[in-house]
Length: 308
Image (cartoon, rainbow, N blue to C red; front, side, top):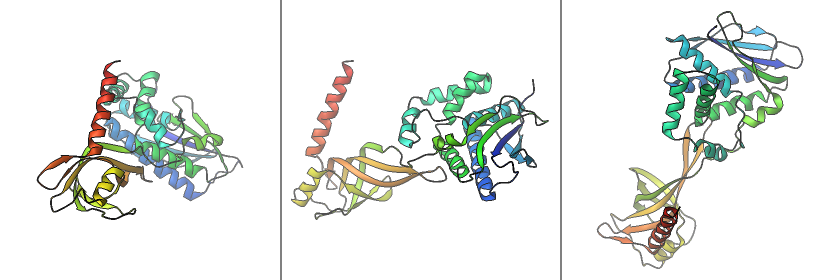
């Protein structure tokens, strides 16, 4: 049986021509190569892709894979082929994709990748592709690829194939029709809010008047601005029942708002304090009313959970 050593993207053109927008093609190529790079990083397999001459028949781009282990390189190429034809089972919003991602533990991810590397077959390769498809960078790069490809009206479908040394297909070409391109495109770049249930913030500048001005503090040795959303605590501050001086800090439920940028990197867009649990003047630490309520609610949830 031939082992895959090359990868092909076939752009099918509706006017029987052999040319397409160079900006679109080059941007698609960049997004694809970045995806391949991320997949090889996740699998821990060194991969180099070398461009070959473009062939006609629409436009067929072929890359030759270079690496130390031919069998593992073939696995990577198959995973990449699956990825680009892996239509999301849910909405393409990142929050919905994240819900799918949460199904898999770290141990399950590692096991799936290990199984694919040691016993490659349709089942293990598809399961490993699901793991790779949960990478934010892969999701974003794949989205960029299809969003860019949509801009070229003459491309009516795209095909993905693994090839042998003689440019013969190893298995059936995976075809994605133009009407399905949008299914791969992320509609919303916001990520699920990350919550720290006991964050400590050293207060630099509290807000001592009504309004939407942001507080300033130090969190994890980093200067941040944050919205104070604990209305009870804000009333105590405005009523001078809580005062601040050098060394003041709060322990709180901190919401960290994030998004995915165009490069697939996670960027923090803001912070907000949901509940202040404790406040310190630099010496004494005092539990707040909101902190007491939060603790009681947590204890009730924990007790209810222990009943099942």
